[in-house]
Image (cartoon, rainbow, N blue to C red; front, top):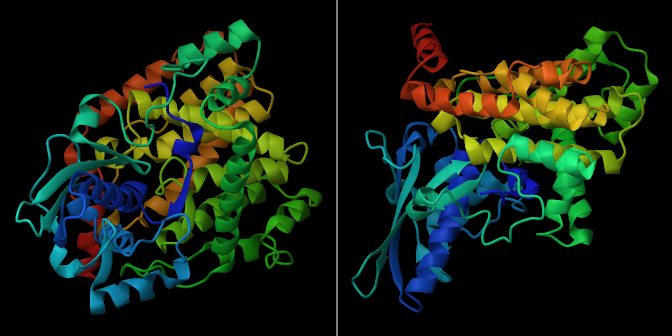
Length: 478
């Protein structure tokens, strides 16, 4: 499956979860397209979506029902006005006016979305059983899986280790199935990892489309930081979690906190800040993104929404505190390298917390960020993969135990920790010798997948174990 693009790993959408929000959104769209293709012209009387496994257990807190409703309204995750989402869903609940397969239809989310908490599909932890009742009396049904990061697949595609996002792409000039393939290509061509990845992307996209797409990703990341650093209040969901990024920024740079857009990084470069302040600012940037994510704001899956704050925070660290300002060309290289590292985890393990715990989200995002930063710091291809390996090595076994089924506690803080680990990993690698490393990148990927398979199901985004149980009990007692 060496046809996963960087632009599959980075997609623009809304929070709070790529597997529980963006994936189901895409599943509704795909099911509608399949119904229109297979039963053209047949009137649709009713559509029903049954959520299984992790989608049923944490779907309410992860806004799965909201995503399905928005998809039935014809909204797109990249362009929906996030400020209008609540109003759009309230109107749908009131009048039931929706669209499916090009037809107007009555859709009642309370009736037509079912959370089957006691049922799990053997194919994947995130399953949706979709059924359309047709006027000719014969129902039309499909089952799809949300496999993490917004990727979706049917049962047949899971069996073939394919998924819908990659389509029928041609084999690239430098096929990369494992990290060792990447290193061999770099050695044979005498080039960097980003050069190899760019050559592969050119096999799938026009040259003049690659840079604009990367710029849009980086711009959206910066905008999510800006919004997160400006917006105060309590996050939705009932845990009464206060947004912290604005106050933290005001505490660290009080005279500059109001200019939290692109001008802030220029200001920070001109300041002489203690190392501790730099690290706290990195944490602030990560918190800002994931507080936006928790509020169903616009973010970039990197490689998931729950881990969306790690890479933007590390890129901002490089932009604000690197030896020289980060150029657009360097931002492209960062995205290419980190995206390829994410693709290797996608191909050989998982990026879904419902399948692998939080190591598959924060761990992967930290590895991606470490690799991207390492190349910009002058790291060799071997050092880049060494940085990614170090980052993942120190996330192995991390569980996913969201309190209340919300992407808030402990998810938001974990993004800050993942960003700081990524920076440390890049520093260690760029000053290290890959030939002396005791653990290779491919070995840590295989170990992560093995750990994921052995992990108890209650620690895989079900809210049935860990903090999700213990903290909830304490909150009830209080």
